[in-house]
Length: 231
Ligand SMILES: [Zn+2]
Image (tube, rainbow, N blue to C red):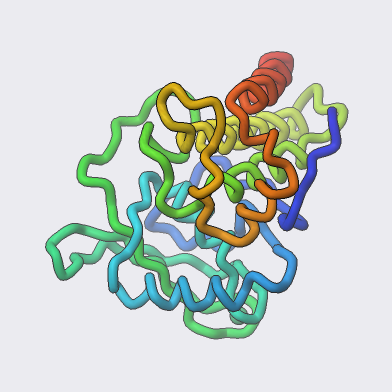
């Protein structure tokens, strides 16, 4: 397959297929990032950890991805994630994830507002419903798609390798779908002023064409075709 441009995502780890949310979770789906992003990430996570106005997490998978993308100030994004449902000051419910940083031992905490109605399990894997993410910007979603696509082995025809390839491609497709949700109805590309992260904005400046609807559709079709060949 084509070499994925990993951008600032230097490494991804194959996600665990099934996990109950109440269980601790210490492996990350998307691992290390280049330095330079940790300062902003730390202040953001502190803010959300303080229950000020936590962002909506549409699914548990999206919440975990956000935490993977916002490492501790030491650079480590992994921590054993204990989750609890807490009530916010405004009465809404939220998920609170806490644990000790696997790198430096600092206490990590993230709070995400829960969706008003829990979506019924649909077919296929999705990071959220039709509304755009409040946690990751379209550039970050495209980096995530690249990172997962880059995990797919060149020859994965059977057994565990095929299962890993299927999992990674499924997530790459779901991440591409998230990019597309930022394109306005009738629009042909993600608007340039919508990027909220430095890494997302930089990717858009470098490769604006990748955020066009037709390009996204073409890449998605290619991944879906690979998925169907995996059976
Ligand atoms: Zn740390």
